[in-house]
Image 1: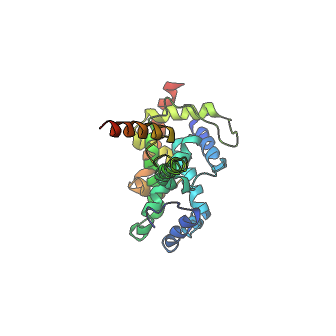
Image 2 (image 1 turned 30 degrees about the horizontal axis):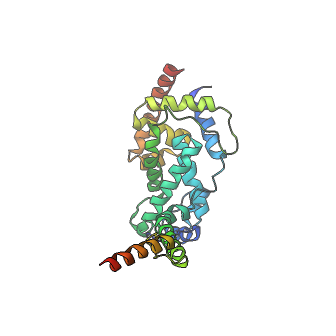
Image 3 (image 1 turned 60 degrees about the vertical axis):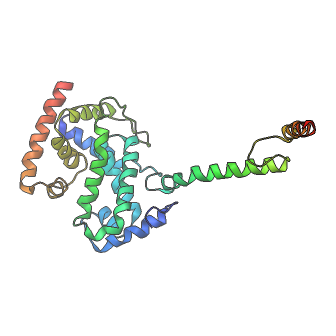
Length: 182
Length: 81
C-alpha cells in the first residue's frame, strides 16, 4: 500500500484498524481513534496541531504532515509501545518549525470567525517564544492541550514526579517573559 | 487576564475550533506526483495528433507549408546536380 497514488480516506481507515487492539484510552475521542475511527484521529491530530502552533491556518498544514507520517508508519504499528504518546510526539515535532515563525507570522482567526481574544493569543505566543523549548512544550502540552502529568511525562520522556514542578517553573518563566513583552 | 485564564482561553479556542475538511484527505498530496508526467504525455500525444492530422511530420513541429517549401528546395538541388 505504501506509496500508492490516490490514497483515499477509506485506505486510511483500513490502515488505522490495526491499532484497535493496542491501546485503551480513558478519553472517548482517543478510544474512538484507537478503535479504527479515522475521523476521531484526524480531529485529535488537528486539535493537537492547533494547540501546539496556536495558529489555525498553520495547524492545518502541521496536521496534514503529521497524518502523513502516521500513515507511513501504520504498517509497523505493533512496534509502537505507546501510540498515544507517539502520535503526540509526531505532531509536536511537526509543530517545531512553526515556532520560529511566531514572531513574524500573523495570527489567523478560526474558520468559525473566532477572532475573540486574538491579542491575548499573540501575547501568549510571544511569551512562549522567549522561554526555553522544554518549558514551551510543557506549557503547550499541559496548559493548552490539557494533557495529564502522566501523559506529558510519556510524551516528553520525563519522570512523572518531576512534571508538576517543571510545569510550575515553566509557567513562572512564561509570566516573566510576558511581563517583559506587555 | 492572568496566565491561567489565558491558557484556559487558548484551550477553549482549540477545543471549539472546527476541523478543516481538508485535513486527512491525502488524495491530492499523493496524486500530485502523477500529475506532471500524465500532463506532459497528454500534451505530447495531442501535439502529435494535431501535427499528423494537419499533414506535417508528427512531433517535428514543421507545418505542411514549410514541408512543401523544403521539398521544393530539395527538388531544385537534385535537378541541378
